[in-house]
Amino acid sequence: MQKKWVSIFMAVICLTLILSGCMGGAKESNSTKNGEQKPYELTWYMIGTPQKDADKVMEKVNEYTKEKINTKINLKMIDWGDYDKKMQVVIASGEPFDIAFTSSWAANYVLNARKGAFVELDKLLDSEGKELKEALDPAFLEGAKIDGKLYAVPANKEVGQQSVYVFNKRLVEKHNLDIKKVESLEDLEPLLKTIKENEPDFTPISTFNPYLPFDYILDDKMPFAVHLDKSDHKIVNVYETPEMEQALKTMHSFYKAGYIKSDAATSNDPWPLEVENWFVRKEMYQPYAELTWARTSGYDLAVQPIHEPITFNGSVTGSMQAISVTSKNPERAMKFLNLLNTDPYLRTLLDKGIEDVHYEKGENDKIKDLQARIDNFNMPSFAIGNQFILPLYDNDPDDKWDAFEKFNNDSTTAPTLGFYFDPNPVRTEIAAISNVSSEFSKPLMTGSVDPEEYLPKANKKFKEAGLDKVMAEIQKQYDAWRKTQGK
Image 1 (cartoon, rainbow, N blue to C red):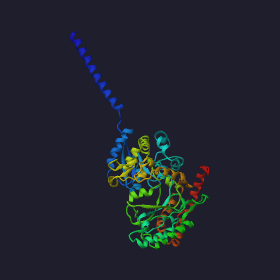
Image 2 (tube, helix red, strand yellow):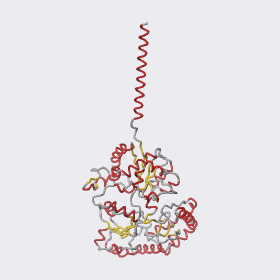
Image 3 (cartoon, one colour):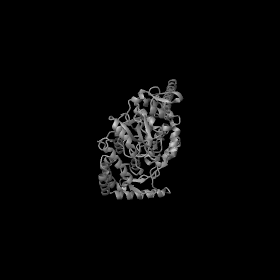
Image 4 (cartoon, rainbow, N blue to C red):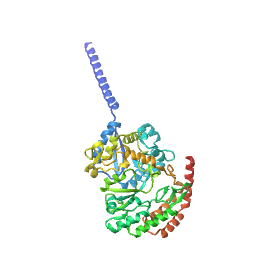
């Protein structure tokens, strides 16, 4: 009997130990399950030249984002010239990723949104991006909507576009040139003549399309536009307008005078600012842009406005971040975009790099680039996100961001802001017209050919390619859109 009780006692103890072990295991398992989750990794495609110190900076970024939203970022930079084609492949293949830079000019925002490549963001902004939504100028949100829905987060920056002539300031001062008298393309002529006669190492005018007062429907190489200075809202062929004819005649006279490179029609020279071989170029302006450009170029620049700022579709969609429909966690992606655009530390880290490694702070927390940033972490600031929470540089005026707000408030609205043409009904004709544009646009715009001879040829080919049919379809859609807007 004693042995029996001993056996029973030992069995109870063993069972207790087993249960204790099981409970302990269960407790440990629950601890792992209920404790901090493994950080979620977001894949982010960004435009720009891959930087040598990107891994070093991203290590700091991921320390911070892990602490803030338990998220790590896998940043994939694709160089400027390759971004469009590579993102087309990524999107078409259905490759899983979370966030990508998109715009009116790269990773085609409208096209990819309409074909379902990007997540519709209105509800996500309200749930996971409230602070971001509050930070954005409302013009960005409204102007970037396609068929009433938003498919990418715009970068909070200048909302309008302002074309300006940019001059090499050293040459302006050397030859005592009065750039304030330049109020038209023709007014450049005496300045270009001076440079041509006295500066053999400089091309007087870099390759650029002359400014014309039109709101382009597709892009400024295609012929479809609405006149900015008229209120009839008629779609026109810009190649048939007197403004275009006059501008092309002037450019051709500049070309014949040797102010423009002889191979301008075929050259792919990007005219980098760092190469000081030009006198005047045309750029899109933002307040104090000449100071930013000077930091890039290494020499001083001067600007002369061509027109007042105007808010176009291209300006509100000029820099955006979209969330891919292949993302497994769009909510987490929006949380990151919200943090990126509202947290000054994270925004600065991704843009300027690591303090005391890539930049240093001085008086009033203004910063100065160190050589390591110039050489190893020169990121495309405008493409990353909210500009207004970045620190000022030591040579930036104290009122820089106030000037941006004034610039935005003063910007007038283009006639087609918020209108995005659906090309599907005339896709064949648009492809044919695009081919004609590729043949004629650059030779004409660079002044390389005589417009009196080549404009009629171009317009004949545009007609044969179906220009009238496309113009009628654009007018139909534009008129219908205007009615929905109560215009």
